[in-house]
Length: 288
Image 1 (cartoon, rainbow, N blue to C red):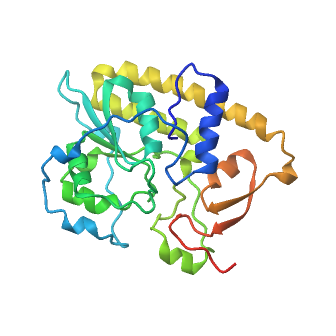
Image 2 (image 1 turned 30 degrees about the vertical axis):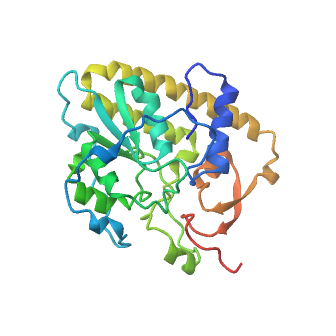
């Protein structure tokens, strides 16, 4: 959700923002023009550990250790929360909830694919400096495992915004050659944001986490989350209205890779094929 959604804006603008990102560029990290993300120069930080091991990906790395809102210690009163989000989609939702009360950095550039992202040594410094790191979870950011290990950040500070979402289990009949190329997503489809109702869960998780970290601004986070969730409900109703204009027989989708499962399930579409029969956009098309 790269394009920032402003509370009080026209509903149609909200619809366009979601549809352009969710349907046309679900996983590529490219979307409509976005509000600028606070820019931090991570080059000024000194690395806390040897980062040479992060230059190579280990396809068999363990899952990212996670914390929860309840495991976070509150910051000293008056200290602004330094928040890091892995993707611009997660970052945009965090921005809606945190607003001016937080300092937000997004790890993966807006023009990068999270499936193929290659982290830099400076990314370790950014993670180490963060008071909390919000991730999509469900295996989307497995590249983070070696970064987290080298950054020394407490696992309690790694929060999956997808916690509590009803996930879609991955199908096992995908083409074997494609599976060899893709990153391990575990047992669940990670593309949960394709259903706006799941983003409501994100908002709740983010607000709860920020409130634990920064109790002084808890009311602000709760108010922002409630307002944002109402906009998501309006968006959902408007999409339902648009979909109703398409006959059920014609609600069929072909995707570049398997990324629209949550969208199709929620809005009654049938996915009849994928050019790349895998859950990662870095996989290769099959002969078919």
